[in-house]
Length: 392
Image 1 (cartoon, rainbow, N blue to C red):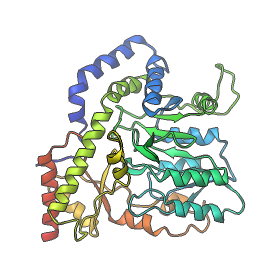
Image 2 (cartoon, one colour; image 1 turned 45 degrees about the vertical axis):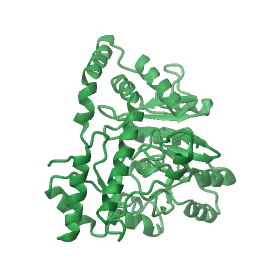
Image 3 (cartoon, rainbow, N blue to C red; image 1 turned 120 degrees about the vertical axis):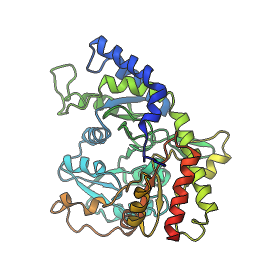
Image 4 (cartoon, rainbow, N blue to C red; image 1 turned 60 degrees about the vertical axis):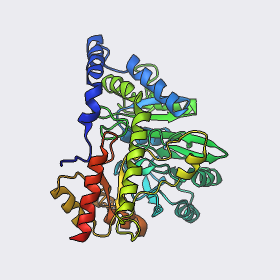
């Protein structure tokens, strides 16, 4: 059996004709910059997220970058974030001329630990930390209640890196849930093809409830111009392509179904690992959906986790990967090297400490196939091969 980590073709096939027709309409329209498709997607994503506005941009990276630019982040400033994330989370800080400050992760959720955030803020006696970027890693929201309380206490804006978590919901208490990206000042999404909502190339979006901040974002994505040729700000070319927008509008209609499929597959993986007695003795640690209980007790099912990745933890991770790949099972490491350990950071940040939970996750985690079209038979084969790995 051949099981890829991600099979985009199985998602494409039922939508292919509709997508080709829509792309053809954009080509024939000759409206290749901005236009109605981009505006339509912005409105639909904002509505889906229950946000006041959406601003389409060229990538998830640029969504983060333009948000920091709108805050005026620059040299002398520091931005607090997690050391365990994709490079873009740190890269945009460095591109602004600012310095990243890291707080270790919670070893259960892999998201930034609010206690570590509190410690970092307490140590910032010079008040140089000007923003916090929590990452909703693998499709599950960080502990936003605690993070927002700290942000309020220290009067620091929060930019949510929700690149892997569009549609993920966070429980605020008393049956109230909010979508990722709408709890802080802004939320940044990626439409990279591998995401739950992925385009046929790069794309991203920022959502926010502050319309004035949204207006700034719109100016910055278009060289800071309003009107054309009049530049009140220094921005960049961060525009979303209308071909990506038209494809994403088609896919957005199916997103909830795909989320549900991924949650179902995650639950089946959990059962299979338990039945194989791999979780009881902690040979395999499966993902923990920390908000599942609140979702079950609510009046309708919630996206407590959208499983952009299904990440397990095993002690002998590197040999496990070799074993799975030799059996045609796709798997990947997210992420093999923490951000504070990256070569490009040397000389830019002084006295970066160790972050043991993040470093342990980098050494011991791997992602298994989880896309909604994955069959139970394929999942059974994956778990069967993992069980054989421990018996070899």
